[in-house]
Each structure stands twice: as C-alpha cells, then as structure tokens.
Image (tube, rainbow, N blue to C red; front, side, top):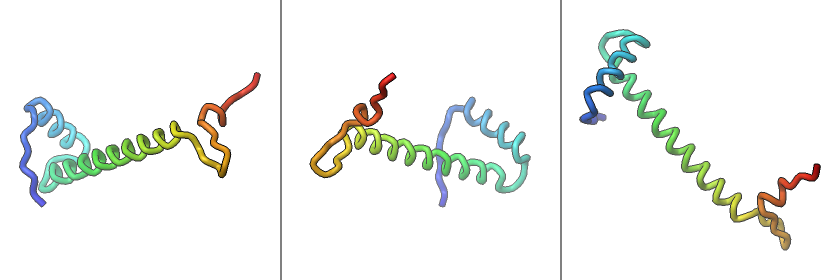
Length: 79
C-alpha cells in the first residue's frame, strides 16, 4: 500500500540519517525502514493493550470457585 504522510523536518532528517547509517542508501531502503518502524509501533500498541487488560483483570481479583482472592492477598508476605 501507499501512505503519504507529513512529519516535522527534524524527525525526517534524523530518520533518513539513521536509515543511511544502519542500512545504507539504495532503492527500497527508506521504505523498508518505514515498514519496520510501523510494524514495531503496531506491536508496541498491541502489547500495551494486552497489558492494560491484564492489569484490569488483576485489579478485579481472581475468582476460584466460591473464594475470591485479590492480587494483594495472593502476594502477601510475612517476614
């Protein structure tokens, strides 16, 4: 697919320079780097979403039949 975007000049310059340093200059190098950056961004957002759901689940407590335990109760330690 094709995406046309506008970014701040400083970000564009730094991105192009990093691509040049990491993979060199040539046909498709910039596009491949943009694709990698997009994939990483999407993966990070999905991980954040999963983490938020898991934290919410933990805050509600665990149900084990008729007995419910909150996270703090499960991790109580006596010293």
